[in-house]
Image (cartoon, rainbow, N blue to C red; front, side, top):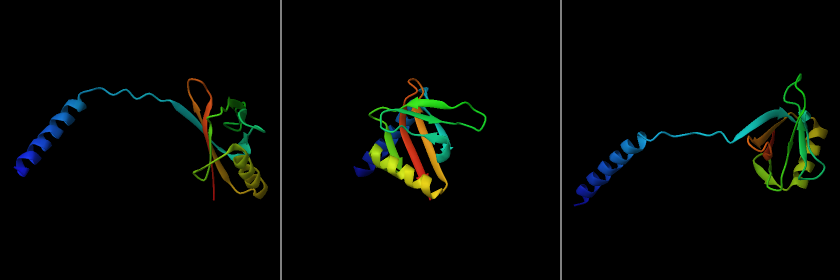
Length: 119
């Protein structure tokens, strides 16, 4: 009996996979990001506010608004904005190379999260 149940389960899984494989999937990109050095990003004094950044040495500065739901991460740990700013200031004082990722919603151009990563 158990063997029959396993065979039926395997058959159903195979049929389900085959049927699923025929359904076209639409992948929609919801976010874009900038990957920058900390020196290329200016943060607002308080959130929400605009983040200003230089995407490249010859590019004009871009600005994206943050919201109350923007998430701020330092080394993968979520921080309240004022603690995130303290970490930014500490990194700038040491001059240690620091990566900043600014992720924003394509439709609204609003920042969804900011990731700061350092050694």
